[in-house]
Length: 148
Image (tube, rainbow, N blue to C red; front, top):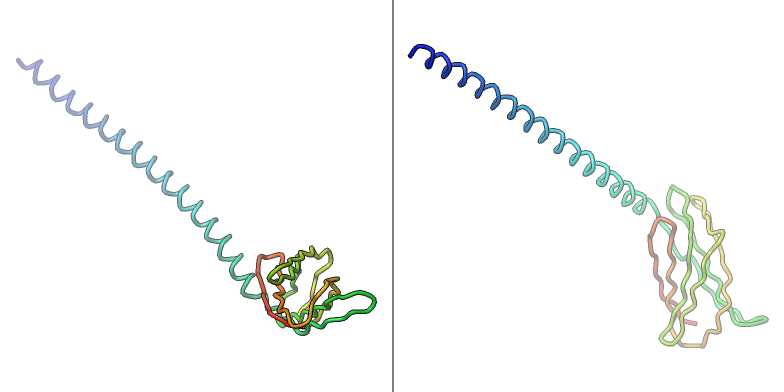
């Protein structure tokens, strides 16, 4: 009978060791998984935060929009960067109830406290209101309404 008791004592020690090793392995796996999830969440949050902060720092104003008709009808749009960082305008869209013109801007960089004027060929009609929609490289959209 004594041999039987000794084997039971050894088997409970082995079982305890196996459970301890399994717990350590599972615990390590959970810690590594949570660290990788935290790292991904941190990088996504950092990217979103920096994008939104950059959008807030963009302060662009349509300073003047005037209409001309020599030699053909056009609209001249003057933009003023009132912010402290440079802005890159990528697109200007002029729209009314029947017509839309989309003009991609190749060199729309505006330094802080500076202006940029763009002449856009557009066959405007008196007393028909227009919307001017300006898009920046960071995704900000500025809209203003004018009437000839």
